Image (tube, rainbow, N blue to C red):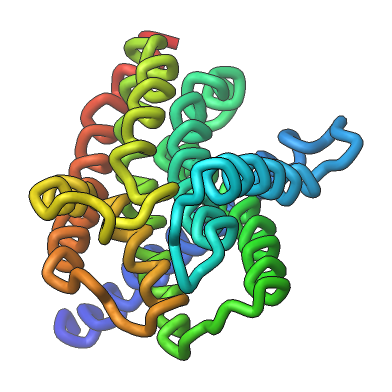
Length: 273
């Protein structure tokens, strides 16, 4: 009798786990949708700002670096080169900054009902992925306008994006938890991201940088991921494959460390808020 009931007990636990995961996914989706709606609710142009912002920024930098300073990124026009880097960078930076206040900014919601708190920074990052998809449409339009060849290796882009999502969520978990304890984390992350931007090959190509400095820049996982994303779209091969595994290792470490830190600080949320 005991042997017969054991498999049934296992099946029940599996069903409960799957139901829990389903609820977690549904809650994350709803919170991400709410985040997007709140962000653009009383905006005249709404989600079009996700297109306008990178478009204007790319036009300005394209004029300054491409026309005034004659920065060469041949055979890729500078405006397309820069817009590609900016599109992927903005997803990371905006995702992190949205995650910072995702817990501290929802104190009223946390007081009403219980749910896994880690859902909040997760939803914040995924909401910025929706913005990213609109920005990606702008990049595609510019690629078509400038007739830039796109390689079949672009099919690898979703794989790199998944890695970037996990890395962004890992950083997001860290800063969301720490911001509950220390509210100046928001200001600190703003400064850190500004420095991080210049240490990532967003507005310049690595081939124009000294070899020793290239090594430093590629240890930066965000820089490596942006370089990989450009490579698979425009060149058809990975120029620095040895740093791919460094980025994979960083992603795994940051994601797991982010969850561990969040879970460690989570019991203090009720006391602080």
